[in-house]
Image: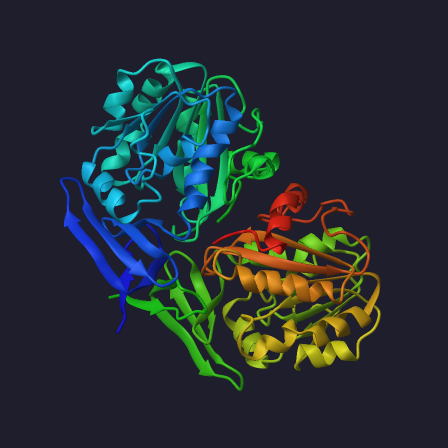
Length: 277
Length: 277
């Protein structure tokens, strides 16, 4: 007999999945954490009832959030990863030999623990000696950081306790922590369902960063799917792939790097609020 | 009080929508037809319980299924539209002044009637004098057609009674109906959820057409969302935009034309079945 998991997301489309088994459920200090088993997607991690990753397709999101900037930056050595307690972003960052240090800043230690236990492939790089785990608020950590090449935010939705990661104050701290070619990326919801949030975030980033841009990827398990990734950069455009593509990936490559950014006309219409949907 | 519409689609992700009102419901000779009202998407057309179009976002699918080939073909005059009883594809085709004749072949007349009544904006071009409505099986119609520049299939899912539109026999009929630069396009489900179907359809098209290709668009209301459009062409690559972009659209433009096709490496890996998900 199957049960259905029903998401009540920040979205007018509700996603439901068959639940083969509930493997884990806990109330952490910050949120409801659940791991379920689904026939198609394998194990799925949910925070407050919203799907964060699935075994089958986590690489789309993790690769696209990580490798675009890791290839746009000429020499990324020191990286801050905020959120992403499952370890997926850390795993992708450490595929790059330039990396000397990853500050892995997750506010909810229970997510790390759950990922180690149920998603060992995703969490595989957490214990790498280059990784320093910081269990704390990412915005607080960045305030006191310096010499950072790249900051990657892998948070839950813009609403909720992650909202400090979408403020001008936070973006300014990120900028101040950075070396001269510093770059920043965060997800900003679905272009289909939350276009206004996507635009507002671009405008907010422009108040802090000289170069701001936007790329997208299709993520099946995030409602609205057409996921927007917002970039702030101190100097260099993220559209250019400045380093040879030599790592192993399942989706990202140097051609997709170029393709994933909004076209010029489309980006222009978006920012002028000329896109009607 | 809200009800939820729960789709039981050909998909491991079930989409649900709030139903403000059920505006229409009938069993036609072929299928269950429903029109509901949703706060976010406006009116929604469902066939056998699966969302076909919504007022809010129908243009993504209709524009992307129509305008890529309408711009790749140097001079599209005579077009067959199979399915798409709502009239959305016909509306888009008739934006092009080159068009002299559209054969609009829909097996279920009730869909046309429902669209005229509930989706007048989508159905607006059905009575244009260049349109000839044929209420019949599209595969049968194509068998006896000649002098066709473009064939566009806007069917329901690959399963069900639309399956005759995904056979080698049908593709051969399409080819035989065409003028020298003839082109064909059909949707082939989601790259996320039905990658194997996408590949099989490319392979099947290659047995008929010298040039076969694939582009995608993100469609929020189709589960899996990352929607694949398969092209067969007698001679010309569909990647080139051969006619000036002068029509009014909400999403498609000449830059998106170029961007929407799979990159070479990605397409190559797909066909070699090297993509693992």
